[in-house]
Length: 177
Length: 177
Image: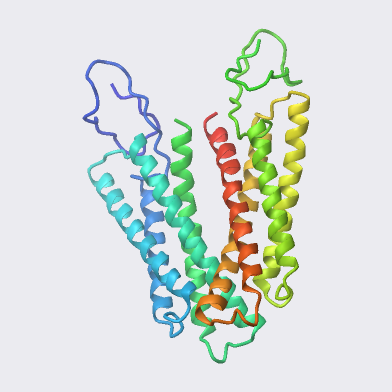
């Protein structure tokens, strides 16, 4: 017997069920969590912003000479790969109508989201510091392509901002078990 | 009747008790949460690192001319004030042996910790980006006092790192109610 309630899609019997009629207390599926349509939408936006930040910064002429810009490219690349992998897992879970709400999976997603979102935020802040230095403090926008640097930084901030809900959903569902 | 268990100090009856024998389900006090000795120690370290970052950066000659450095001073100042206030509340709670584990208080602490730790981390990352630019990319340490800038940045990172447990304790106890 399955005690899952408020699930957004039918939940399959997992192989861990050890028979009998004992109800399994399972995490609730809220839109935005892994394996839901909302979660998949979040992942797609994360991937889009990460790729945009990566591409815009990698196309900039200043990128190889400034460590923070190289770091943004690396962090956005990692974030893009992570979000793409989780989007694929979400699509699989939606297609086979399988819930991803079990403790080891949610812990892994929460830690992964925490690490990638922190790295992306750190890279965005470092680039923002340098962009503000070039643009406002030193007024060197004639030499550097400020618009491109600011766009890449803004994309990285948006990517961080859209990864936060994924992280908090996972962390919350982990804590509220 | 009080249903609190594993409390580190005797928990007083709160004024919200509406009489009768109905058990009150209360959050558990874990060391590190508000109103515990561990929580007070965390607040003291946060305050110490915030004051150190504030003082070292404010004493630097580059501080007024670079936006990121001014922002670090502001963020470290705010973090210091927040941690000091919560340390005073923790001392009060320990002295009168009162538990701070109720939902509105923990929500307020979690939001405050989340905001201040994000601002401190952003300031630390922005300063780290500029310090690495000056030190490694442009090799301008002869003109700027790199050691002072790096020390202030390191203090801000330590302050962020020691605020994270406070935030996670509050968020976890909020979610696990």
